Amino acid sequence: MAKQDKTEATATTQQDIVTLSCGVQGCCPTVDFTEKESVTIRDDFGGCVKLTAAQWQALAALATTRST
Image (cartoon, rainbow, N blue to C red; front, top):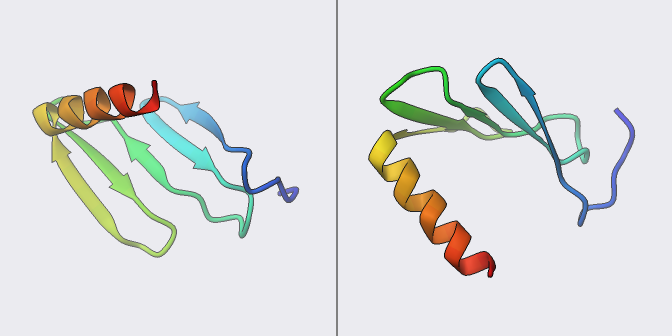
């Protein structure tokens, strides 16, 4: 994997799993939407956070309002 500028982030989707491509060490976080009632976020170090669909929607709404 080619090294990317740290300010540049991309995402790729395979089925219902989104991989956030940081490009720094070849390990990238994923966001897994395969379960209907939950979203699972896995980090580069094996950590995992599972959110309910309602928690994910609240987080997405907060991120949207903060980014504008």
